[in-house]
Length: 144
Image 1 (cartoon, rainbow, N blue to C red):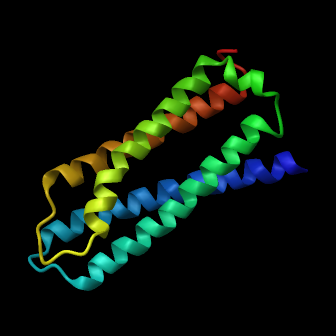
Image 2: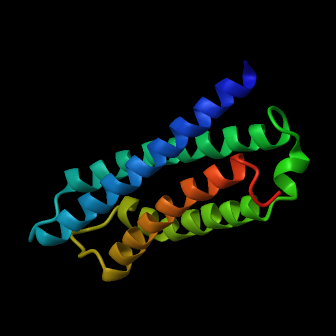
């Protein structure tokens, strides 16, 4: 029962993280096309990134519980190079999203969004396509 609960939490966290990233990338892209920067847009970014942070914490927390406490033994995951690739991609994804989240959530006066922020947000999206493939391969025992 606990395994099903944590698998579901892990899935919902991953889906929420992906949805938050897509919404943030689309919203940042539309913000650069507007000539005005509204305070409400920055408030919206804070809300998007707050919910995305909750989803990330949920996914990472449930993933750690699945790895270390419930489900398959920890050796199944710890000795699997596919699992290590997935963890490395998740860490890369989180590192990629730190600067855009910091830039878009800080209080600022009508300052244009630099191209670096948009590039980092868009570069995170392909990572979100590769991570589920690695998760599927890892769960099926490939690499073990």
